[in-house]
Image 1: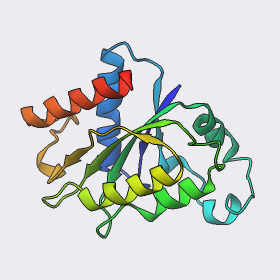
Image 2 (image 1 turned 60 degrees about the horizontal axis):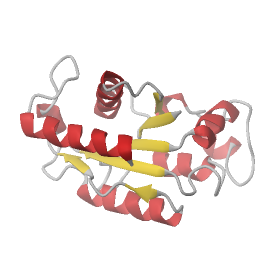
Image 3 (image 1 turned 90 degrees about the vertical axis):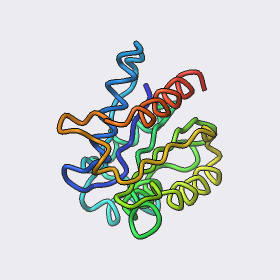
Amino acid sequence: MNLIISGTNREKSNSLKIANYYLQQLRAKDEGDWEILSLIDIPHQLAFTDLYGKRSETFEPIQAKISGAQKFVFVIPEYNGSFPGILKTFIDACSFPASFYHKKAALVGLSSGKYGNIRGIDHFTGVCNYMRMHVLPLKIHIPQVQNELDEKGNFTDALTVKFINEQISEIIHF
């Protein structure tokens, strides 16, 4: 099993729409061993129940999914020039080093501005490197995401679709 992680706990986020798009595209390529883990679904008291060696019953099945996954696609919105704090808290709650050690990751940044979370993806790459994850060199940056998706959650720009398809092919063979 592999996971697409929607990197925010914001309701009805563009990150979750993009995660769903990736899932559809992977399944269209007969890559059915992928599923979405949305940070909306993590325990609301995560910072108090699952950090510093503590483990709650509600986080155990999430930890099992993380431990069982071999590849990840992180869909990461820009929050204050970086990635969301909830994503860092989530990573900190996962068992170290077993959760991410020598596993593979593709990174997708998005923003409502014109840079597509370049800085946040660089910051998160540093976190991945520390955890000894192997990060796919092709990182996708989606600027002005509000103009990229139609009402069904599909991308409207052919060049964006081209690069996403390249990244999907590469993560499959990574």
